[in-house]
Length: 320
Image 1 (tube, rainbow, N blue to C red):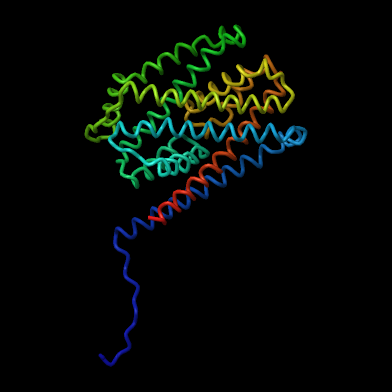
Image 2 (cartoon, rainbow, N blue to C red; image 1 turned 135 degrees about the vertical axis):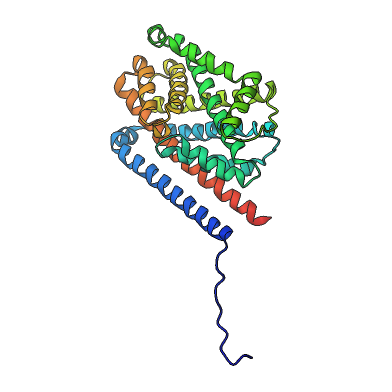
């Protein structure tokens, strides 16, 4: 004994400890901002469609929601199959957590947030942040190219006047599809890494990866379009006449929404494109209502899948 009372003193956080605390604070602030943005959007739009929802058979809304979930899973798989090109095979559940949680960043203004969140979370599972950023850009490119491609192919079956008015869509779509070919993609990845001032990384992106990722993304557009179609049926639109316009409008709306970076989750862009494509079949009033309902279904599904993926990922981590 020293003759004086020992006093327990909390250890001073190391620089690494301060960094961890800072990252946790940023994560919490990010999630609070995202949840607030999502809640404000849903509350703001509910008044515009509440009457239509009350008049619909809820079965159509449930089926539409399930179609959204399938579409989101296909989009996630389209992203995850590219990981082996960087030399990493990511377990499905861990990949789902990274993808779905980071995608909530799209509800904040600017497309940079999901990329930043994905880079941070991907670093926790062994992928360099620079490679994660490149992977996010590849996913955006696949999304834009396939969405424009699906929309451009289907437009002539809806209204030739639409194709005449938007003649540039097939040209832009083909240009993006060319960028998905392995030789062009490999050049683009090397260029992106140089811009990020990172050394060249192994990138085994071949035709199999390109076709699998693109095919899964096309499946995403088909199920997403089916979701819009089911909403239209619930609103009383003829099913036979509305399926092709729903798929085309949905694919084009999402692709252009991603392309126009300043708009959070393509806000306003998606609704405008869907309304333009559907108006000749449904009339503008029903088209606007369907576009807003589709947006709300996607918002609910985005947060639901992120919550489930985060919960499953946490349980899996705790069990190890």
